[in-house]
Structures are given as structure tokens and as C-alpha cells.
Length: 615
Ligand code: F6R
Image 1 (tube, rainbow, N blue to C red):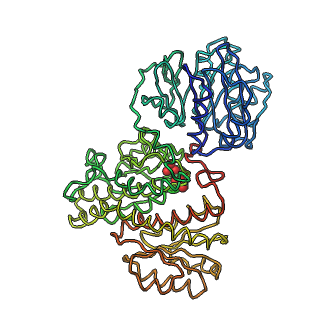
Image 2 (spheres, rainbow, N blue to C red):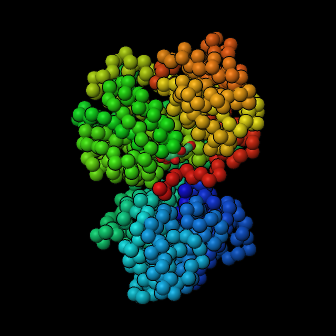
Image 3 (cartoon, rainbow, N blue to C red):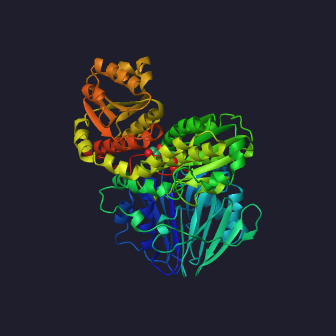
């Protein structure tokens, strides 16, 4: 969702910025733009609706020289996707260019005030209001760009990460953030800025995560002045080392990032559990839990807050934690939690679950939980993102950059970490026995081989997918641990193939959705050999008696379901709480192949963003 890139240094800014925009494409966007300044201070701005490639095509033959610039991919919030609304937005005088990620809540009031002072607006965006405001303040006060930006931001309500340049001033770039991420990369005689660190990989591994309410003035060759927007105090840059390689950001021979990420799961699950299970398998070591042992011993309740796929992982986590820790667990959509008057006390542990670590609703839920005294534990993938920096403690899932918009390896990583969390908290609270710990940790260690075996189903699933491209609706059914797996399978299919799909607890079907079943309705049933297996067999029977088409995911050797189902996919047996990890992989492949056969862009599905930084 909206990506920012900026550069000041000795290279051609155009090359760095375009490469950066391509790296940020995974975040989801509908238009792109770039502003470049030459040594003589001339500012050139180019914008295009559509892909970054469309922007590249548009600038062929244009002047793209200059060693300072800002660029943007926009995900429309205020105004339709079109050239006019794309960023950079430029002030009426043509002097200031600005890119923005986030939303300015009070833009209408500011716009009216500026209109009264003679400012006309060429776009529908809230961003244009901000750039005009900076221009106005500078014109009236005759101040520096830095001072004008600070003054403008003092008048703004909302969320933002911004980068600003000024015509005639090719030595200065200003950036600031509040609630939207911004990273500064420090090279030798050059500085990079971006919404996340991916555009910097290959240029520098020295990064600064700008904090909320901070503004930075960047001047040549690589001087940085970081100031608090609240207190005005200057702080020394906290430079951290980035551990991300160019190879991790490339497709590595796969046709899409999504397929690469599905196939990476044996390896990402290994990374996820590495160093977290004692050699004898009898203990789980999560430093985030052990260093805060008392909070976990005294806890009366856990509340998991998350959105989308992460929320599905949270539902699985709920069951594992309730089973192993004997603690009540609630799972809330972060967007509902924040406005739901939650009754929270200091005996609650709020677990914030997020791949990107930047989801606006989840961040707001964290702030609310903290303000009420809860201990907040983050489970996140992106190292250094806002969520891990705003929680009391936590665990990274360590599955590497997830570029495909549809979450795959992050989901299985989240479930694995939630299982480790349940084991670790359960062992400390004395609610889980050694045998159970050993049984689950043994299976977790075998997970890379198990998932490799499941990936062997790929050719069969690809073939099977051809049968279902006609379908306009799909039902996904599961029970217990695999009701959330059904929800996740349905979400994967709808988001990348645009086929309507719904997940249901299998037994709920007879209370309504059964009316939808006919010979054209594919019903995917997740039916491993677990404590609810026989119940699910009955549910399959009910679907078959109404002519439904059943695709069943079963444990190897399950003859009873094989007899009834139209298609059967077999998975290795694992402990019940880990079945969602195993079962979600064939569902990812099924969604993937159906979408590809239908010719969809699975890495960048329409209307979706990878990191949802607006409310
Ligand atoms: C779906 C998907 C989204 C995200 C959701 C939360 O494939 O990826 O539903 O799970 O937007 O994002 P994070 O986990 O980054 O907070």
C-alpha cells in the first residue's frame, strides 16, 4: 500500500528510484510517479496511472537526469487512480514536490483555508493539501524547507510518511513519519529513503528506522539531522544492520513470487523454529516469554489481535493456547477491537500478530491495549517494523521477505510460532506435560520434510485445478483446528482468482449454506485423522447426498473418505494442533493454480495491498 522511495547522492537518481519502485510493487498500488532534480535545480515530475512499467514507458525520451529525487507508488484513498491524483503532488507554484503514504484526516478544513488564500487544487488528494500548505508556509514565513515542513505537520491530523524536495535546492531532502513506516539507508556519500528496506538492499546494509513523530533533514553528501516533531529535540541516528539479501528479493527461477514462497516453506519453517527447541525436545525457549515469565504466569487471559490471514492464524493459536496453557483466549479483528470498548486489565496479554508489522488497525489496537495496562506481545515477520518496535516483547517468525501479496509462508510461520508460544507458556505455567511437548516438538522438527512431501502433490493439484476453473463459488469446510484452515483456504482462492469462496465450520453447513450445494458446487473439506474426523465424515456424507462435488484433504491411508469424495489429497499424519500447517499448503497450491489457469496476476491481485497502512 503506497510505497515511497527517495535518493540523494552521486548516482543517477532515476535508476535507483525505478529499481526501488519495482521492489515496492509487491505492496500493491494503482499508479506511480517520480520527481527528479538536476544540479541546476530544475525539477522534472512524471506520473502515470497503472504499473511502474507504464511510468517507465512514459518517460522514454524525457529528461530524467539528476542525483536527487523522490518516487511513489499510490494505492488510491482520496480520488480515483489517475495521473492527476498520482504522487508526487506538486504545489501550485511548482516549487515543492511531495510524496505521501497515509491519510490526512483534517484535509478538508485545511483545503478550504488554503482555497480562501487563493490556492487552486488540481487533484482530489489529501496529499496535495499538504504540499500546498508547505508552499504557503514557506511563502509567508520565508523559512527553510525543513521549517516549513515542520510547521505544516504541526497543523496536520492523521497518519503519514512523507518525502519532500524543493525546486532550486538540489542538496536537501526532507522526510518525516507518523504511524506510517519510513526507513533511511546510509551509504557512502549517499542516502536512500523508502517505506521499507527492500529498495536499499544491494546498496547499503546500514539503516535507520525513523521513529513516530520524527522529521529528518538530509543534506549532501550524507548529513542527517533527526528531530522530534513534538519536542524539537535532535537525536543521534540509531544505525542498525539490515540482514536481507538480493537473492531473497528475487524469484529464484519460479514463475511468480507466490509459487516461490509456497515452495520455500520447508526451509522457512526450519528457520522459524531454529534455536527455539532444546536439543532433547523437552523444552521450548522463546526469550520474549522467558524474560517476562511473571507476566505470563499471572496472566488471566490472552487476546490475539490481527487482520486477514494473520487473524486466521490467530484462531488456530487460540485453540493451541487454550489446550496447552489452560488460559482463556479471545481472537479479535484489530479493526473491531479498537472501537469495541474492550475491557482490558493489566492481567491481560494482548498478542499482536502481523506479517508486515505495519498494519494500521493492528498498531492502533496495540496502542489501546498498552494504554489500558496490558502486556503486549508482538509476533511479526518484518524485522524492525513498527509493531515489534511498539510492543513490550515478542517473537519474529523469520520466514524472510514475503513479496507475493497473498500471504503463504508467513501464515505457516505464524502458526508455528503460536505453537511454540503455547508450548513455552504451557511449560512455564506447568499446564503441559513433557510427553506432549516432546511429541509436538518432534513433529515440528520433522515439518520441513513433511511439507516437502506435501509439495510433491503439486502436479496432481495443478491437474485438478483445470477441472474447477468454471466454478463461480467454492465452499471450504473444516472443524476444530481446521475451521480456520478452511477460512484461510477460501481467502486464498478469492483474493487471487476472484472466485467467490466461503469457509465454514463443517457442522454449521446444515444451518444454511447447505442450500447452496448442487452438482456444480465444489466443496473442499479438510478432514485429517483427528479427534473430529468421524464428525467430518458425516458432514461429507451430507454434501454428497445433495450432489456436491467433494475435494477432501485427508491423512494418508484414509479409506473411509476416499470412498465418498470425488477427489482426495493425502497428507502425512501430524499431531492435531499442527494439521493446519500441513493442510494449508495444498490449499495454497489449489488457489494458485486455479488463478494462474484463469490468467490472473497472482503476485499483484487487483485492489489488494501487501501492507495495509491505512485504516
Ligand atoms: C491475505 C493477506 C492479508 C493480510 C492482512 C494483515 O493473503 O495477506 O489478509 O494477512 O492484510 O496483514 P499483516 O499480517 O501484515 O498485518
